[in-house]
Amino acid sequence: MVAMDANAALQVVMDGIIFELQSRGGISRVYQEILPRMCEMDERLKISLFADRRTKQTLPQHPQIDRVNIPTLRRYLRPASIWMPVLTKVRDSARQHRLGDGSGQIWHSTYYTYPENWAGYQLVMVDDLIYELFASLFSSRQDDWVRAHKQMCIQKADLIICRSESTKNDLLEYYQLKDKDIRIIYNAYSQVFHPLEKDEIKPEFRSLKPFFLCVGRRLRHKNFVQVLRAYSRWPHKSSVDLVVVDSQPWSRQERTMLAELGVEQTIHLYRDINDDELCQLYNQAEAFIHPSLYEGFGIPLLEAMACGCPVIASRIPSTIEVAGEVPFYFEPLAIDDLCDKLDIALSSGKNTPRVQQGLEKVKEYSWDKTARQTLNVYRELVT
Image 1 (cartoon, helix red, strand yellow):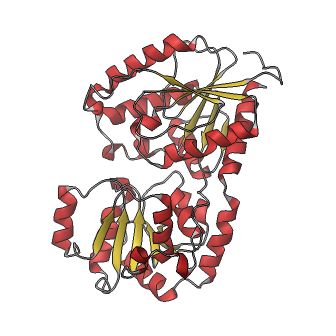
Image 2 (tube, one colour):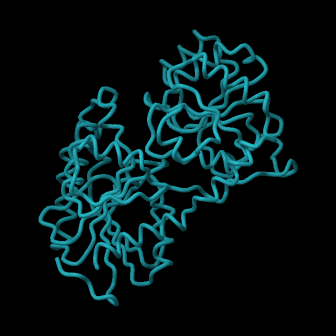
Image 3 (tube, one colour):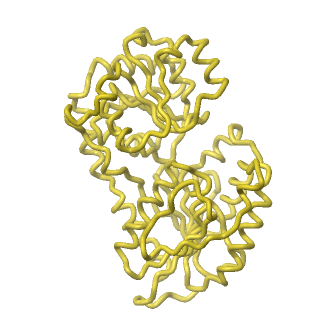
């Protein structure tokens, strides 16, 4: 491959498949935040963003981002877990027809796709190794597709971006990589999240009973069931509720469990919450609970700390890397330990050195920084 002229356009071809898979989520949030910022930072950057006409969310917008519509048949072939091989072939064929050989361009997929016969550069972002390290929890045909394509992308990549040192270490160990260039670029948080004055809290949030807060998908590796069990045993649950923010409704199994544990009246699910409303909840919560067994990064940690919300977190490598000693840590599978931390966080309150440390810690992270470092990786590839 030949290095680009310093004055030539920086051409990036991006598969926007994540915007078809997620209505919201950490991975799509990253691209929503950094793509327009990178374009503002470098007028040479031109992004061709391939996507189906019907995405689950609005694509990142900027004059230097050119949306290229491609048919995928996703809305006709359901469930996607069964039809994924067919959908992938249709998508690849339609995309390949438009791509050419890619000479001098960078291929950057938002979620582990790759073009055939690509003569340009290839970049892959590895957010985590959940599908590999927790394969028993992710055993569907679609999960197999993710693992296979992820491995192929890693093998083909000229350069890999990881979201944490923890993820990089997992990647090196699992794939036995020795000759791959890896860059660590941290995620960040929206400036929407910040401490609010009392008169800025909306009446509907001000009137809530004291509560702990959980945010994000309730997948098995997120360890939410352990929170339910600990909360059900906690002696003060009658005076402090548990608020859960997730776009997904309660499953039948979860409803049964809530009833069996006797906590269906004190646990409340908030769906379709926007960032402004989530900021209100962080500001009102007694503490934010981050119970995951594994994370590649953990954006909600930054959101909570930026709002001055105490954090209770499972002791896992990525959380320690991102949040330092700000959280009250508990061992991920130790229910009694989590109960103790609920007590400590509640009695400590919000006017503590930990909270102040959290407000200082989040200053290390910004989407501008993430965008600038990603742009530098693009430049590194082509020079």
